[in-house]
Image (cartoon, rainbow, N blue to C red; front, side, top):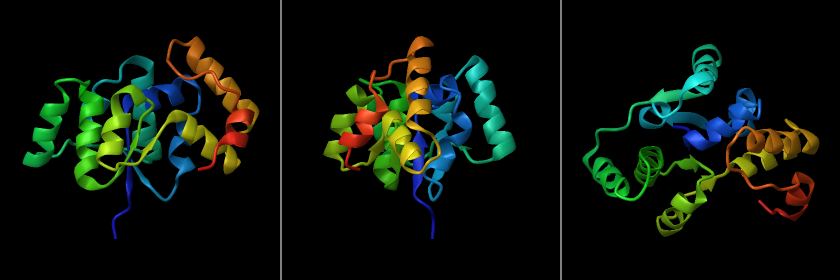
Length: 170
């Protein structure tokens, strides 16, 4: 039986790298296989790419996967790239036809599509929520993570994770 995959988009990788916690990302949902499509992998640059490469080569808990040459998936990808970036388009098209989970915080681009096609998605805040629930991170560490990611120029909602955890029913 194959594991369900979490198909991680660049924004989540970038958030966890900037927050200093890329190494724990694949441990949050350890029963899932974490993959990054080659189209997404190619979007990541610089020191974050080096961190990701270390994770892929040394820990082997995130795998780079070639975007499938399936006609249906490729048509959907081409259609999506008319309005979305290549990474989001690749993740959405892949997940639609493979019944996998998308890991992305780019809700503006993915939320309606996921709702329409009944796809499950996990945002950076969802990953943090579960990391806290599983005691992989503390609320304080998650709050520092959010502040660091924002300070380093990435978009992430400014939330207090204590409030988020107390109000979230996942």
